[in-house]
Image (cartoon, rainbow, N blue to C red; front, side, top):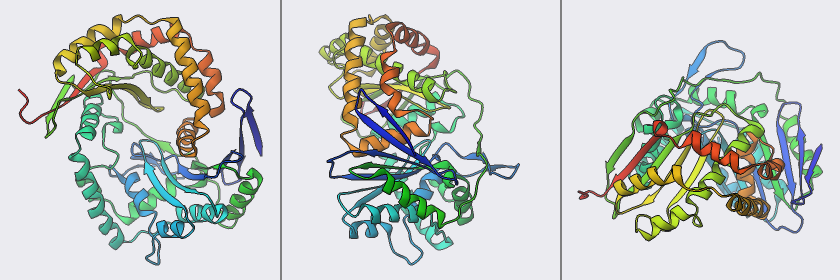
Length: 428
């Protein structure tokens, strides 16, 4: 067992790695009533082209298959539902798929050992048949069609398709109606056996628990299943041009006011670990300084009536992609675009604002440990990008105003900028 602590925030991360390659991580939170556990795999919607360990050929699978596989994991061979097993113990359970990972989780105030055992077992007990796969296609098709009718979802999805020409991050996580119709049980088993091996997964538990007891339980559970070693998975991504695919995309939907989102494609990709963490923190601080609620640009745009209090700017990314998104409702999207294009490169970035925002970020990091769910989500996101959670504050403190200036200069250029609009049906 590895025990690492951060004296500034007063938190400790306990870690153990099993012979199969499975990593177990525990954050002990004395006095906290809720226990939150996750079992996550480094497998998301962008992992559609890969080489199966032990083979040489390239495998291509349909868009949306990672999300489809997540749905199917809850179905038991006897026809039962895993959600009912958790509910019988007073726990809630769920799962989610993003671009790079799939996470299964439970939250409980009791019966921790039993709930953890259910989590470990159902994620490692797939059951796919032609009949249950075909049934699931209808369910997910309805989910996809629901997203197509959601203006906010379309706003973001259209922007991703405008920014990216080939990278699969441009595609909806759930896939398309056409792509999921081609999924078979054999494809699901192949993806499961490739990406759900323990060496590609992590167990995370936080709450008032004994780390040694958690490690011992997971160790016993895994030893009984006899997992062997697996070679590293080769993930293949297409070459992505530096420039955007298109500068503007519009769609008309039944909305009361236009929805606006300006995006910037990040070409500084390939980072991981602490380099990636530093890059993301710098980008986040840059947007807070430029368009946070305390910024001058935000205040002026608000006073002009171009934005409201739901307007926001953020950066998101992974090892192979990255992008910034700025947007919200606006009554004049064309004027807002012109104002942002002019103001963002010229806005003054001040060292005193950076110092204040770094203090704010430090407080939010400390507060993160008070929310088991948020901590679990952030931990898994960082883990699969080889980022050390406990090093966050050290990296944050090392960032200078010059770092932020360089980030703005390299990121906010017309060559990587695109705008997505959802316009009312009757908008002139």
